Image (tube, rainbow, N blue to C red):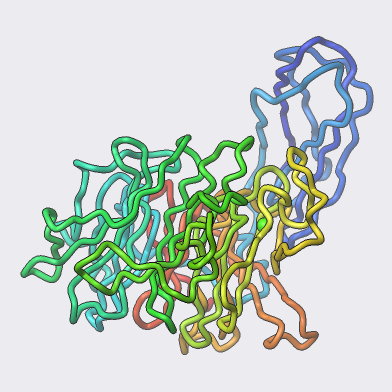
Length: 448
Ligand SMILES: [Ca+2]
């Protein structure tokens, strides 16, 4: 229950300003609470807004409409008292239960598909830990502190086990090198299946990064083709055009064949640009900004790609399993359905693939994920793509049209975490887990 909000202004020069305060009601809609018109404000001043009567709200949005030159907020203080658990107000019938805590900046939860029951948790700084029967094992599975730079958006970012694991005991990781370069490397397990041979690391692909932002880094093997898919961010320089640049590996989804251990990788013949001059053959799809996750439906082979937006829209993109690659998801020409203000947008009718779901920043600030639910415990989740918002901890399910009575894409909020969520993943039994980035916990999504 929110009962007051204080705004400490940063402003130059002093003068009249106009603001609106909007409140979210925890069911996905927000309403205008108050408009403050032509109030005289100056730098350092505190505006006090009393909410009478107090309201249940899960977000406060302050919209500044007029100012002499610029206004920002040194602080936004929200005063509240506990209300009923907001998560219980959702109709999904799901909740998050803390499974294990004690991780440091966990950025991925995954499994090897080898029947061992192990859950692998990637810590952003440099290591991968094993969770077995709800207990974190003392010895790390992998620790490559000697070659990883962290943190922010950099670090040890992802781990993927190919379909041939463990018959061929090779696995793949992506990380930011000491020099700030994105690296995809393969490692072998040692004689101990719970331990990677630290010296076996072999770099197979590097992507230069001009900036510390937008590294992407997600890895996954296609369930039908066995190829390694790599999510590559655009590098973080808004004035570049990496997402649309055919000779750049940044701002793309890449697809490579890593099955021959004698070579780093091979470009599959059927990649859309493998035979086209001036295109990098590794490119599977382009027009991506910062894919903080993508996931295949293990049953259909369909691919869901998340893309973190700039200042307007968060996206979920979709490629059916029958697709042949070459999609252009728009960035930086478009941000979701909106023309990006810094690039000419007259191409928008030509060849761009729009997201199947998108959110403004009152709903979510950075989409992360994800996993397609194919478990047996929750029939209502069957075939849904589950993903989350890093900033608010909201977790959504995206239902494809063929599962919807109105034959349209539907998004439903399934649960609210109380902490930022950095990844959605699953174990071998297809149970869904999320990683709490700040509290270092792994949570399981369960029926109420
Ligand atoms: Ca897009």
